[in-house]
Length: 351
Ligand code: NAD
Ligand code: DAU
Image 1 (cartoon, rainbow, N blue to C red):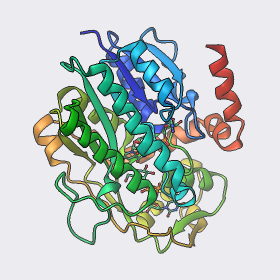
Image 2 (cartoon, protein in one colour):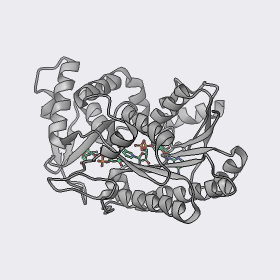
Image 3 (cartoon, rainbow, N blue to C red):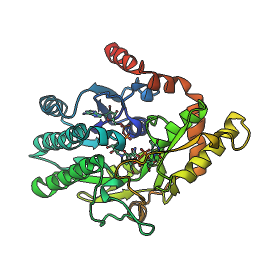
């Protein structure tokens, strides 16, 4: 069946994996990648698919209402997979308004545009909102987040994502917009921007720079390989029930300090260093304000109802990730040197 899909944020970390999966797996679909190319958006992530006949890149901002309304009217999309967002918790502490603008207002503008073009016939249409487990707040030592866990966001980032989730559900109940949502745990893998823990640590270890661990490194995160998240999004987009929410996670909890020690061990092996060399770079630094203690997802619903399961163990995924970063120094250089913006603009002008 032919479909015209809009994927927002497709030049980012997770979005680029979703775009690649859909472009390759669904040659009959027409895939539009809408991205503002902020500091986090990188067209280099999509070098391998950007010439595909079913792929179109559109540079644009989801907070530009006039532009978004026109794009939806012109293209009459059958589906939207919405990933565009400001995604980094530390940046949200420095500049909360940027998160409210993109994550709340931007999402509402997309919802409104979809509502307008689908108001007479929403048969077969779908608005998929990609969200985070951080909306549920923080866990103590025990328990898991389920789809029924009450929202309790505690950072400007998670509050903005929680708000966007509420708007998505409000459009379902009020306007019968055919929505589906997912809330996923921490992703890792290739093309992850090196402001986030795992790619930052890989980059710093490689360059013999301190590896900053917030507080005592006791905080726990539940890690999922990004390609498994992309597969889950594919499954939910096609088979999820309208109006429903699905939690996505790998049942893979790690204390930050244990994860960093494992990463140091992998890096020592890969770089041919004496065991224990990289661990000497670990540096405990001031904690993140309002740092959530523990996230852990119960992904039973997704597994039981839609048959999705993670494809690999964390140790294997982490090794693959390290291998990717060591083999893609040029990507890292562009991203960390600041020249990458220029690259994107050149790419865009060539189109
Ligand atoms: P990212 O920061 O790597 O990418 C975000 C993308 O959105 C970038 O390409 C950026 O250019 C684009 N963007 C930002 N503002 C925009 C705007 N105003 N208009 C158009 N495009 C804009 O983020 P990510 O880690 O890939 O996360 C993608 C989505 O998944 C986000 O909604 C995030 O909340 C959610 N999520 C992330 C994780 C994770 O571990 N990274 C886990 C669960 C959910
Ligand atoms: O849980 C899903 C969320 O995971 C996503 O919604 C977010 O978009 C994504 O950024 C991620 O948020 P976290 O804050 O959990 O990820 P981050 O990589 O920033 O931090 C992971 C943990 O490591 C967290 O406990 C903070 C800690 N940390 C982070 C950095 C950057 C450090 O100890 N040192 C660091 O330098």
